[in-house]
Image 1: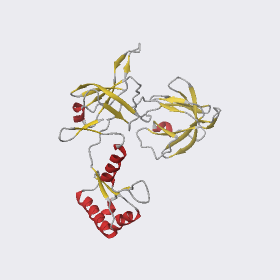
Image 2 (image 1 turned 60 degrees about the horizontal axis):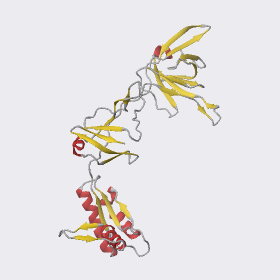
Image 3 (image 1 turned 180 degrees about the vertical axis):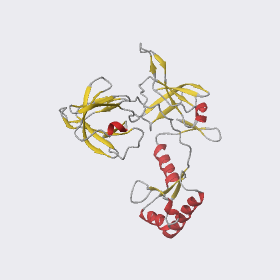
Length: 309
């Protein structure tokens, strides 16, 4: 390809020039090629290396070729101490070592997403044959109270305190889930902070799910689920979809379709650095989630731009 030099003339880089330029640029950026290996060692400095010269001294002695300072951390005074410690170590060993300063900058992130539906899928653990090996574990706590620390495989629901106070171990709670499926929960533990119950069948629980405790020698007791855990929101994107990135911090959402499957509103997501939104141009690439999702900007307005996935 052709490159224009500072003087305005055009110079040609050939395939034969590639290895030479790679060697030259690597040396300028990362230091001279070590004698005993083909790679260079870059080490990011911890804060402690500013006050403890032995850290940099030992690293240089062990073969460090390039000292990296992450300018997103610490301050100029600390960076200067690191550099001074390196200079002292270089003079002591008579070695060279480049300094690579990684400049800190703003992080462009997406904003919040609307929470998911208020429904929790409770299911037991099954083996590869579909046989239940562990029941689903559920903790019922008084509505409005904070739940204790729980494991990842346990779900917490809020219920009226008066209902909990009437439960005892081995009681069976009947309920109709969101699909109107009849289910049964067995009380396995009663404590000061609530009741632990287990279910051997799958159920979908929403706020207002009716509960019933009915025993022959006890009056029927009823209650409703008052709260369920918030479900994380998500946006579904497929190849060819449009995503609108907005400057305001309104919670994002997936695309909305009508009953015929026609697009009503595209998926949207906000940008936590709104001043960036008006600086982009059609044809530029945008990548999300460390490059997992990408697209090309199709249209730009002052407060939003459209990305085709």
